[in-house]
Image 1 (cartoon, one colour):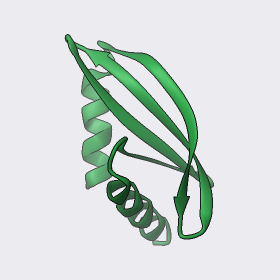
Image 2 (image 1 turned 120 degrees about the vertical axis):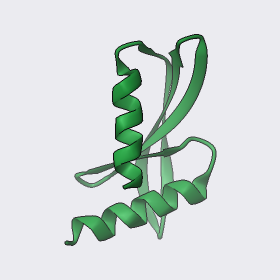
Image 3 (image 1 turned 30 degrees about the horizontal axis):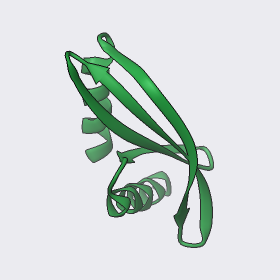
Length: 83
């Protein structure tokens, strides 16, 4: 549900959203070092930042500033993909 809401939010703003900056990095999750990309967006005069973490074939979108949010998103995605 959370992932679906994030995807819907990005789709609704995608037509008028511009990526203004992008930074590569890593994210540590349970001993694994995962690739992370943090992007700054501009839309309708506002800016926001999101982080995308690549966990094998999975891609998780989460808060750029809240590591707990990212850990929860990865955990949820891993559980969901085991169904």
